[in-house]
Amino acid sequence: MRARTRPCAVNRQQFTTPLPGGRAMHRALRGSRLLEVRGGRGHGTYPDPDSCTTRTVTAYPTSRRLPAGDVMCRS
Picture (cartoon, rainbow, N blue to C red):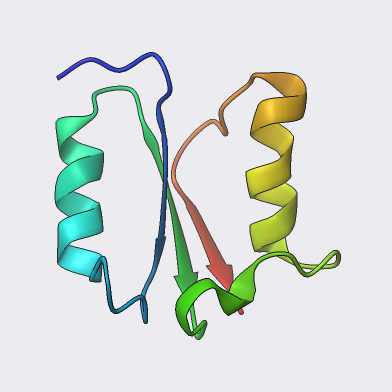
């Protein structure tokens, strides 16, 4: 599958999209980047203005540039 919008964000504790499903989606979307958040629970990791998660998620729509590789953040 090739998508124009390529980011893929996954929280390790996201119950509606468990981590294995998020990783599978990342593999299916060639060119995507995976943002994995350790220690977060659900959607509560975003938006915290001082967090790695918020900086990474906000950078894409404002710059239209993906991170160089996958990103691991701690909540």
